[in-house]
Image (tube, rainbow, N blue to C red; front, side):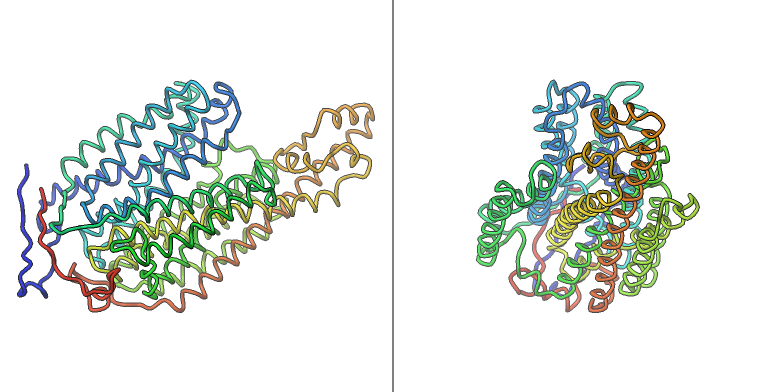
Length: 561
């Protein structure tokens, strides 16, 4: 099933259009490639939501020590590996690393399901994360290999819609599997789907091997890990396991800063850097990175804290966060699909970005105005508007940066965008989480009934904010029980104080999210718009944007079909 299609590198071919994968495979095979890519992305998207639902059972079975590390190990491995996969896929081809990512992901899934203690689960989740780091960016890069920029919108929009669908069905599926088969099957269920995706992708995705010498940036890769891991650890553990001003967190931030400077120096001197600082000389790239960073920071605040508002502030029952977020995700999916079609039909991306950020800003402002008296209809309306604004932009900037660079750098620029998107989400959650905690604590201290203040420590205030019924310590409950009817009234006042304070704190979070979206809207005005290419032939603008500043030249390549 293998054949070689040589690409001529003769001088006469300098202006020739690069060979398109779409032109070398049948329509049936093209459909199978898309299916394989979507299944691979679905694996990673579903895993996070499915596993999250099962975590209470995991804690009960394996113990609750270091539970945050189950998420942190996955986050670290998946985020740090993204730019490395992207660069290597530009050099050695996409298929080998996409398949490697799925193999590692499935291996981690099988091992996670067999975990006998929390330490094993943390390690195995890290292996899963190493695999997940390859799935999204390389799938997007393969779409870039197949379709010219003008056609990528409708396909990238479809892939982002799959992510939104996974957010809805993942928690429902995870809950059903956990209740009927046990939590271990939330990992094992990946195996049949993953095996099918692996076979389809392995048989259909072409492998490209460029015949030219390369220098792998080992030192740059080590430095990337050396600054991003401490930074992510500090952001994940700060304000939770350690105080922000603790020596542990300060040391992690200091280490990240020092190694980041070394990383920049190394990359400026590297022949083929993992993340080249020279990429930022392209204003389209720089602005896209900044807007994507702001988008992720604000978006994850909405996704994470909306379920808290519904369940803890309003006191409504919800099976899981997936049910709560369904209206937002439906708007998200519709927007990504429609936006992708508009992008492919018009080739205009700046106006779409401006409209998207404007709508997202309005949605966040509406969310920030919610109170305990907000009706379900108002809540659904606000979520749909926010989802409509966010969805159109999730794939848009991927296409924008791909269009601004030659084909040989698609993997690098796509993965770098994904890296900054993950960083934005992590930093955003850290900032918004601190705002939520500090605002809630100060507000509830002012509202809590005076007779109860001696019985509620500062540390218990945050815990109260995460319980829709007020809860409290055993000493507080015992004290209230001794007061009879007066105790019941104090409990009612406590619950009201907790809920109103939590609603106010979440409103502050959404205001910051709206500010991030508004800032991204302003930054987008400076985004230079160049026509989306109708072929793989690099435009004059894209041809000049190689990492070493040289004009892109065709290379001799084999496409193994």
